[in-house]
Length: 302
Ligand SMILES: [Zn+2]
Image (cartoon, rainbow, N blue to C red; front, side, top):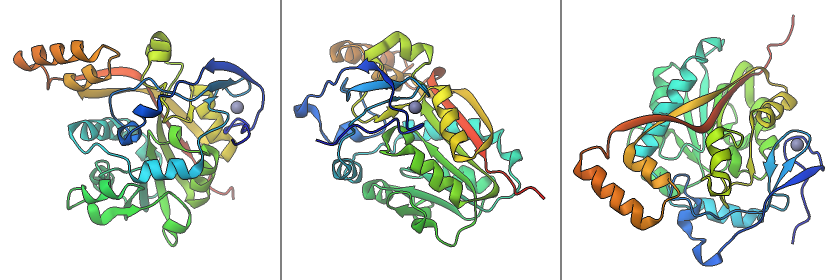
């Protein structure tokens, strides 16, 4: 049993209760660790940091448990992953003119690489995706596969590259040490370069409404951010001009249905109705409580 960690964002030790642990070992399968999947309503004991507003698991699962879970995890390469990448690309696009240069762009937790073509179109070179799951890399489209590097994000993996942009979408919740991740990113970026992250916002109205039945309350999430906690994470590391905004996710209706906390039988019935009426693939954009943060590494003052 590991001892309690301090708040992984501000290192504070003063917290309030958030949720109790609920884990059913029989249901902890590979699917639990895929990034998009039916919610299973399992979670670790979570507390809320009184200093920075982060919600986190004080004793997170062991490192080897997490690593094994991610390298073997199932992944989603279907239309939902593409739709998510499109959403993130659209949210990111408006921030790119703020970048001084278009050297390397790195997407961390790249999956099958759906964001990489967008980064290439935007003129970054080279474009690199980092992904721990070999299965995801093997399933990547032929154009994306040579851009993907297998492993966990580290400075050693990117030696010799000059980085203008690091993106990481829906991965910070899964990391044992998000502070270390952001600080490694800051060290790797060239001055004037930017980090862009998308995370769930636990304070978003939908997540507050669903409470413990929200899909974000899940065993795979070691921490959950609010706008304040996310700003704190980037600011502490030295990022400046930090911009946060909610994003609207566009997905087919059939995917929204999967996310709802309805009983499986009700979902099957509704899905049949949607398919019969031809609405199942209709794209619907909604704010489901995700947010984008962009921060810039300062240029040295002259
Ligand atoms: Zn904190």
